[in-house]
Image (cartoon, rainbow, N blue to C red; front, side):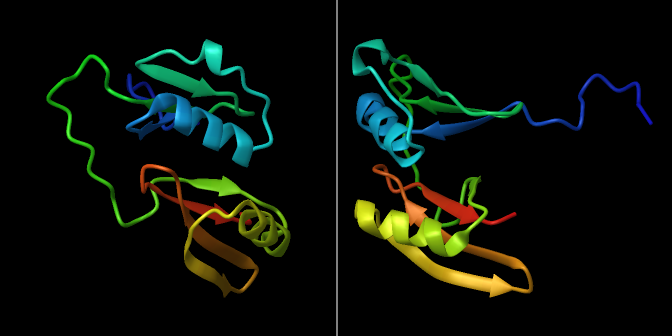
Length: 126
C-alpha cells in the first residue's frame, strides 16, 4: 500500500561525521574489503561504495568551520555480518577496537566497534 506523503519510509543514506576524511575512507574501505585510491578522496565528503539502496557517506565538514565533532556512545548504524563469529575474528585480526563483546538474543547476535574518530558501529547478523 503506497501513501501520498512527500517523505517516504525509505532510508537513502547514513552520514558518518569524521575528522580526517582520508583516514576514515581508508579505514572503512579496508574494513569492507574494498579497493580505494586515496587520490580520489576529496573533502568534504566521500561515499563508500555499498550495495542495495542505502549509502554510507563520510563527512569531514571542511566547509563548516563551526562544526564540533561529538561522538555518540551508542552505535550510529550497523553493518551486516551473516556469521558473527567469523566477523568477530576478522575484526580482532585487524586490531580494531571492540567496545562491546558479542551478545546473543535468540538467533540475533551483535558486537560494537570504534572507527578512527571514536564513532561506534554495530556489527550484526540481521
